Length: 265
Length: 298
Image (cartoon, rainbow over all chains, first blue to last red):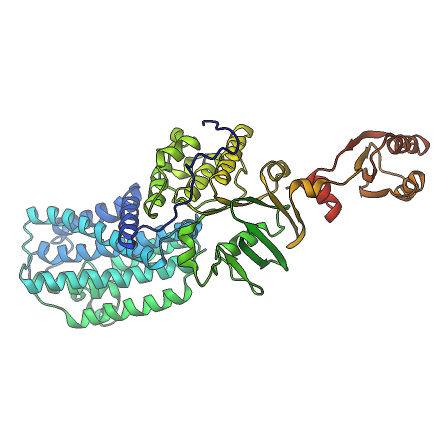
């Protein structure tokens, strides 16, 4: 470190305060958060590796475990795996990351920066969407060589985008609800546990028909609604209205509860 | 010009002038951080008013935040973020940030620029925290224990940096429990203890005791019963004796050799063996001691 004479006015530090334009702040925050979301191994595992393994395992092993869909297996499973990927990022990764942001005082520090809370939230949403886009590309690149032929009409694409956006909103709300209330370690454990439970029993990868009589209850879970909505879009080029409503209700309820309970420190 | 007026903690009332360094000095738990966080808008005062740069830190937070730099006592960065990546990020939230390289040079951050935050040493985290507070070219900087955990050489260079900030017109409010830091840097020192403001003034005003000096006596075995009274009687008028604990006491009175002589004679007469007997001008430490009856230890 250089030593300057004591108390010398250099003009270096002359105040010139000001906030960057909000859009620039939000984009900076989104870039930072998406980089961090993909920085460590567990998160890449959760975001990309597990969905790809589920897809490959499902396609290869479907016959052996007696799953028989009336449609090609890869066409049924790929939409579910896309839904799983969205859930892992917008729920599990977001909850864990936010829990530790609280713990390490990141939220507190950013709370003293020019970035408003709404900008912080917008940055998080953009970061989630960026990571999800990457996931869709990777999963698509694995599924297409396996013979995946999704519906590509405007309705199909619209239904897909609607499902992914509402699913992200619902799961991000639930993830923030958890992260804002529990300790970081508890969030880490609970977010992974809920992810596993929904993966197995939440009708996200497998359609509701695979759950027999329990499907009547399971269909109200956000995981089932998201999986179903993506399947409706990519299998049948259809917007699943009931699922869209279910996801919207989850999103609103989670957002209201989070706004009321979230503790920043 | 008045920068801030807070009535926080337990009836704490202080003003900060533009372009000065103000130190809030006190032991741990005195309410320093609470005072700072009230000014930064993190806490809502139950009573009283706070104005920072003329703004209400809670209701006008969005107008205030771009103008102030905040250094927290710890944390404040993602555990996986690299040091300079974090600094660049905070810079990008400001309209006219300082060049990141300049701050990294001054605060020795190039040596750990690519190190993840969780692997930085305590001192490196502190320097990064200070850099994050300065990068937006603030008018007013709040720093909570800015040099805690730094080695002496780095601490002195941070002091130099804070003096340069003042010379360039930046107002600095810092908390510290290092007396030396307050004595060297601050234009105004506010001593707080248990949430109350116990004294305010420049270091010179606070330590200028006229001809009054302090004699500190530490003994090897506990004092006999009634020692302070007997010593006071031996010393006569105008002298105050305060027992600190069973082996140390402080005499405040005229700064002359006869007082010192009488203290040592009293030791001889009372079969008390001094471990140390020191005479000194009042330091901020003595001021603190006199005001609170407690040692200023972290």
